[in-house]
Length: 154
Length: 154
Image (cartoon, rainbow over all chains, first blue to last red; front, side, top):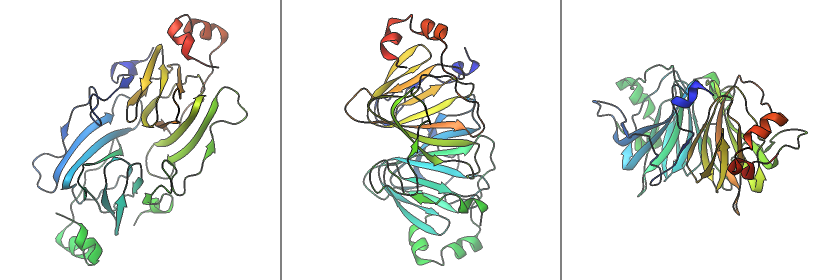
């Protein structure tokens, strides 16, 4: 009935929680030391007839995603665990099913601060710009706030 | 830093589970008798710098969404409860965090078959066509399969 049938199964269940049939675990980033203990899975993507990619990131206990910013936005839904994120200049505690919006060019970082992984879904445009890391000057400005300085990792 | 900040808060927590700060409960559809016990919430939408709307639907125990189809696709993540859905000619049991893809023009319907609400996130293009209901002939063809006939409601 539709070409879209070929690319995505109608249903992908979970042989174990947060591990989906036909969804591979991917490296978060290649050749990069700006993060710790993060994996990536593409839940929905190109070929689905939508302009977005829906990714699932899992941050291991004690881990963090890259502190970065970019011109595209993130629409985030927390799916498991607990932790916190930086968005611009705010450190925000997170619980399952909380919503996070990361505006364009907002510095952001996710950390798993508890004993279990922090898992979250993150929607991005299929066509998007590459993230940029903070310069030393930008990092100094960001961490002038002690709460931010205490939270961020790089 | 960005115009996008004005439209969506960086963080929307939950005063109670699956009820988000600043996210209103909306009617699923207006003046319509094709469904039972369904509410709608817009988690992310226009103004977020993405081409999609992310909705949260909740189907009350015993309820069902409209049996319909359309030219746009759905990317669905189950968030709570249990139930089942029809996608094209398949009846699929659902559990939290299962993924469902509804291709273009696939008939689909969601039902809460257990004792608790079935809640799911559904991503659609911001710019999309209107759903169509099955004609009597289409409904007859669809329900020629006894498993489908047993499942669907209209």
